Length: 207
View 1 (cartoon, rainbow, N blue to C red):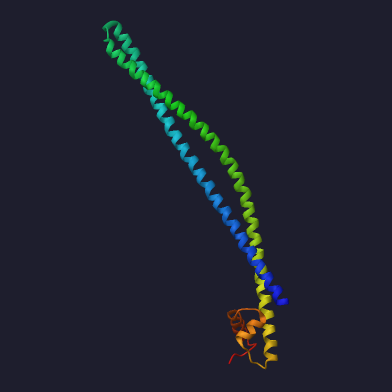
View 2: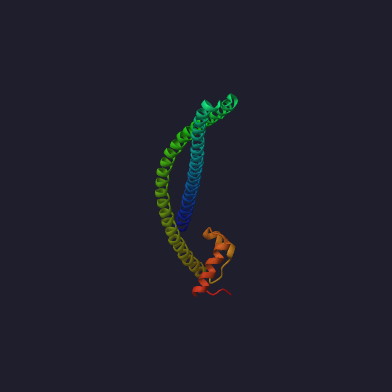
């Protein structure tokens, strides 16, 4: 009866260990996903910086065209600049202005997305911090389970050795593997392993 109870406890400890290992695996998968989200934000920030630089260049070109247009207007007063040349410059001017407007709109949209992602990252980092605490707790719990498992294994081994010695005394040193394993409710492989350990300790001598 005592051996059966010990085996049930031994089985429960193993199930608990598997359960907590699975929980730790799920938490680590969640952490990997959140790290991927952070990388995505960093990529968007780099793209936003690139477009900002492009916008500055376009604004610079725009200002240069405005200056050239003013110069051409001054020249046109004295030199009567051809109207089609002025119209061509105005077309370019409008194209740049439209392009600048589009880029500014894109930047505003990306700023909104960036702000939302930054908020999401703050929440995610808070969740990661909480999950780190959970993982530390579960790891400590698993270590305790492993410690109890070692103690239970040692106690089970000692109890089996004691029962085997009593069995040998009763049966005058003769041991049938199958019958003995059935009587103790264990596998023949486990019985062989215990017998080998007992022989190494000098408790028995297998002929």
